[in-house]
Length: 127
Image (cartoon, helix red, strand yellow):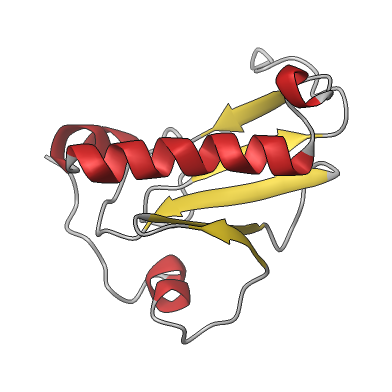
């Protein structure tokens, strides 16, 4: 069972306009903005405007319009940032973290889009 949505998480506050952000793009269903601690030359977060805790929550419960709007905004960000092969870039990584083992820091579904440098291995084995 997914945890209840926390209306006081930082992304909910950003969506309500209580906290500023560096907006890259948005549509009716999603917002894309620059990460405040970028891990790559291009590091953009894409969040749905609805109250979803995680990817699986979003995938199971969002409307078709929300899913399409979110996905299309991700594609728009990749094109705007010039990091996808179709826009002349050399590729990107898209990451979402869920729960304790996924090291999710904010309990609002968000997708990290990172590019502009070689990302290295996906995971390293614990020692």
